[in-house]
Amino acid sequence: MSKPKAILLFGPPGAGKGTVGAKLTNVSANYHLSTGDIFRGLPPESPNGKVFYSYANEGKLVPDDVTIEIFWRYMQGLIDTNKFDPSTQYIFLDGMPRTAEQAKILDKYVDVVKIISLKITNDDEIVERLAKRAKIEKRADDADKSIVLNRLAQYREKTQVVLEHYDDAIISEFDAQKTPLEVFRNVLDGTLDVLNQSPAEA
Ligand code: ADP
Image (cartoon, rainbow, N blue to C red; front, side, top):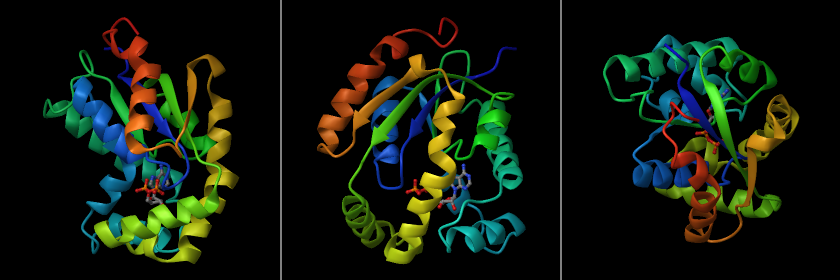
């Protein structure tokens, strides 16, 4: 069987990867998978849950081997239980890959056909957005400014380089500082060509 076709949602914390991913997969009947959501769904007292919180609570990335193992086990589960059907659906990966090493390993598992890169240049805007989200989602890692700044630093140090792993032709950039509806409209416009094709043709 060929590898599942993936569309990456890329950008710093608070850029709107989750918001755009949820809307886009909803209207296009594809599957949205967020590694942050998978991690937060782990029982906090389980071995992997403990590893996750020990890193996330300092604004650090979870080590690559743990991340890949959890990601792949989860994705395989989605395929095995028919929640995600790679022959008719794209998988939108939100928060994966986040390091050059993860990008390399991910190539073994999926075929990346498109990258939605959400640009947000104003750090104050990021801190403000995450402070708002902290109140709604009760996320400790969003509520603390020093943790948010660490996450931003990790993004610049380790995640931004991920784009270099891919062909420029599949990367589309979008201004994420526009309103949520405008961002959604622009991303939909910019991905329509791929979404109108079945994964088998992409
Ligand atoms: P955001 O994009 O706002 O930072 P996420 O929910 O995507 O939020 O991620 C929350 C935390 O989960 C990250 O700070 C990190 O600790 C961990 N995490 C998520 N995805 C990955 C990944 N691919 N590799 C390593 N750590 C990850």
